Length: 303
Image (cartoon, rainbow, N blue to C red; front, side):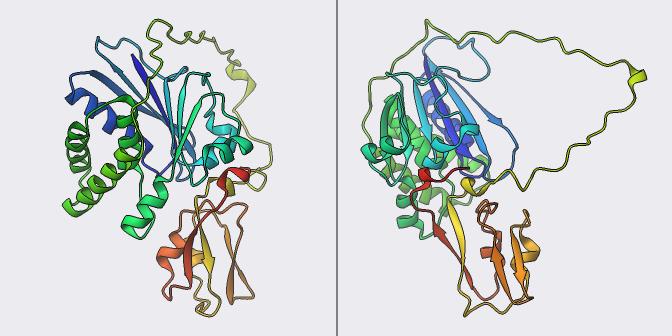
């Protein structure tokens, strides 16, 4: 059995990437299974998706604790302890990271016990589309190539899965083009197949309940949202051109996290410690005073 674990952030397309590689494997005659696991389930929050491929019926379910291949959607996740990228990674686990940095640079900042590979999938998307987009096709193509699936079945899977999501034909064609470039970016690698060593099942815990005479539950702790800095979730940041800003407050009104405040009712001030990089402010700015800029050196930032 080949066990693949994808790590991404909400909105990056890791769930669909797992679906793509599973469908491509199924078309190639494998048994396949895929599933996502969300945490906070907010755009930018770390999430995980799993794919299992085997020639025999797959009887495992749930999370993959000891992956053979790990695919990471951006290198900021390596420095985020909530993402658990390194869980179950051993010396013979292949780890692919979408990053501008070379393997040696990445290892200096984020030690990885596995066989590390890198490739700049985001840069490829920017070059082809001229803007940031979901990485489903690129991530799925890299995973399919590394495990040795054919490009023909990958392309068929892309058309099937993205078509079911309702994407228009031109967008699917763009994904096919990007998937081809990413498929050529890496070569198949021999993967450890730990089919004879499944992960240990977790033990069940019986909760202790208070009697109803104890009263209703209440939360007395103070809110800690300001302590939890989510700037580390960001892969692109909004940047203001003050010359174009007319102080219309649209960015302030549309920011879902309250990370924009107005300075004297004129220009917005962005709180980069809490801005998750959803870029709604960029989308809504009527004068194009806000633009998106790719974060550099992501792995150096802490979440």
